[in-house]
Image (cartoon, rainbow, N blue to C red; front, side, top):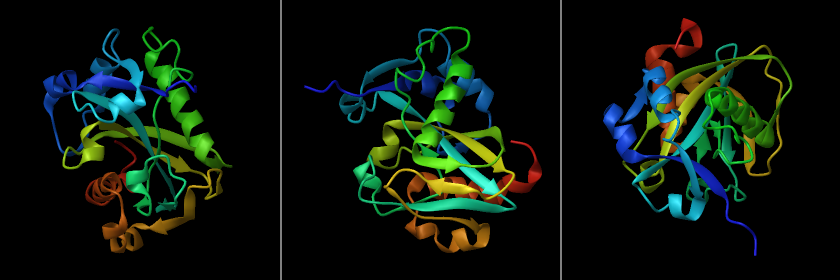
Length: 211
């Protein structure tokens, strides 16, 4: 019998003690320092985490941009999260597993998390250019069953060139699109991508040079 996937979670009460919110929260450091503090985060079986709203699964959500365009794709039938199949996304993300972050609760927890993010992106796409990584927001949406059990950490990767190819079969229609075209496709997007797109437009994150 195959072992159950273990995913990184934090207690909802800890998240709520920092201030519950809907959409994007720019005060990233306050949340990450508390959520990644020793003894807070832990791993649990994914099947349990998906149905227990007293915990939040930590999900890196990486947006890739180049020359004012943002990478977009549609989740195909092989997507791991079946509730998101057929929806457009502007975020590459996934669960943090024990194999990624064995020293998770040591002093280097954040560094281990960042390494896990890079591995997660590399599992889904080939990024064949240099990039700069900024963590620009926390992301939360308790309005649906997927969002209730997840908490996003939004990364903005600014690429030197639009050299990206898909690795995972679940990624289809992969292309860089300008914000106005993405805005026209907003209704086809998963909720997290809608919230991130609104943030990109409202906060002008692609051109501001700061989070």
